[in-house]
Length: 382
Image (cartoon, rainbow, N blue to C red; front, side):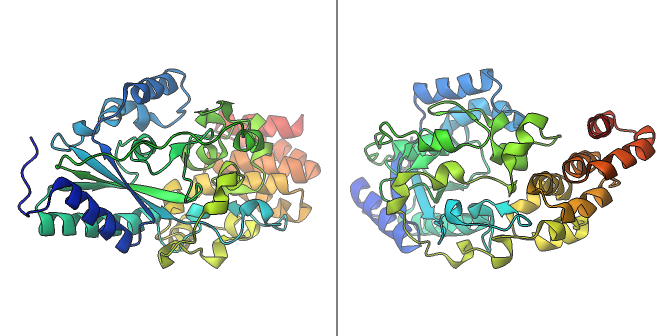
């Protein structure tokens, strides 16, 4: 049972002051949802997992029960305050013409600070104020706990889950981050947002790897964001060309959404882009060792992917560049300590310099201990 407020505010008044405080702290939208998931959301999660569309993301299945019911995270929760913060880019990524020797990093990962840290800092301020000023029990979450935040954002009226499965807002487009404050007070929920995608299918049509099994059905195993961030192994051969120059994430389905005409500029300096990450040189990124990688991406979500997976992505982009000048980077990394990197390097070299690839295959194939890398040598020498 929710404990009574120590202050004299009515539930409606508490809801109003929390909303005002959240907006004053820099959030761009605030909504209130009951601390429960719908049966439809639970069934949707179960169907996604049963189809194996989560790929390597075992944590989705491991915590499915907790994800389906917010009160398993905190039994005292009665209301969930959902907040959104814009990170709209100054230039639409689809309008940027990058040279072929540059990589593309998802807008959210170009920021000066990791968005987890930015949002959690603001949410903690909101939680502390709510607790100290109004006596409410609180807990905060930002994308690091099993919370169905997209579903909760829809129930809280912040937006609706679009056909690309991301949340879309009539006021913010789809360039925004979400965070949640669990509250032990029973507050009136906001009206859920209805779907306004209509007949539009731009997000589905633009996907470079055909990752959508249908509207609202994303197969993560084919998604560039999944492949370049979450996937731990070798990227499937038939998906590599579709990745293009994308070395960390993909913004295409977000960038094409027509609701972005209503998006607002971010007010948070920590979410402004680092210039060196807007169009980084592939050759420089391919030269990163583990220590330098950690130094360059300190305070960035990219750091969590690790050097080997990131350089694997860079090599896929190098192979897709068509630039023979980058073949030297691929050749050097074909002797890297990581089998993941070696395999990607061999593929890239085979795309840029068949003669060098065939020569190295003849010299090194018999010395290769990893069977997956041997397959790459076989491909370039066949």
